[in-house]
Length: 81
Image (cartoon, rainbow, N blue to C red; front, side, top):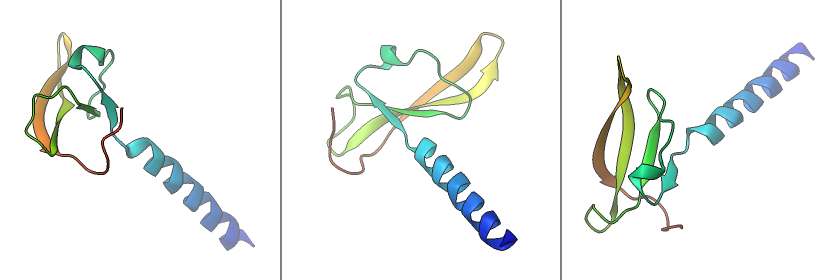
């Protein structure tokens, strides 16, 4: 009985973590208001080649907040708006 409860709990935790791991897609980089350290946001503003999307990451902490880096990464799945 205890093993079943532990298994159910671990499945629920992993499902919750998987749901929050997906990157958020926005239309403009200015729409990213509060970027956290390690967070990834995809920006579909047309600046990257076909089949790719810009990914903005919170890379490191500075005295002014979280520093951002960006790179073009492959687009996965259908394009959504």
